[in-house]
Length: 142
Image 1 (cartoon, rainbow, N blue to C red):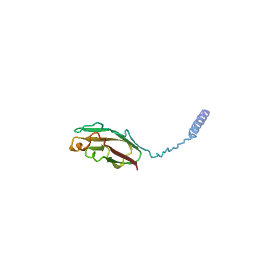
Image 2: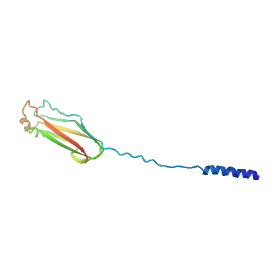
Image 3: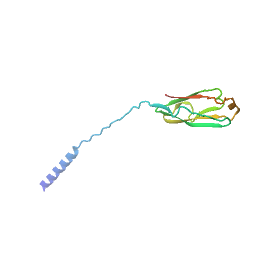
Image 4: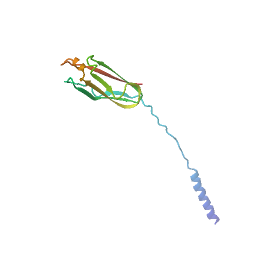
């Protein structure tokens, strides 16, 4: 009986010894990335043609899409060079206002051009004459 008890104690000691000898390791890996600035501005078309228009009518075009992609804050401005006779009848608007500190991400801006020939100023425009206006859009990453 003593032999059996001694063998049992030896087996228990070996099992506990093996279990106690297990070694654990716990380490962390830190992954980091520094993102470089990214920025672009594209315009889907560089011309809008109100060709062959009639005095007494109104025309609108909202097919110009400006896309700004920026992973930093950015500024948006616009300017125009418009033939003096077009000033009272041609207007431009964008659905994003010019400003500073615009949000990061992808921003789609629709530019709309309206030609209103229903007023008296339309009769100041000479027939068969091509009038032009140039609208400039600028996006600058901060």
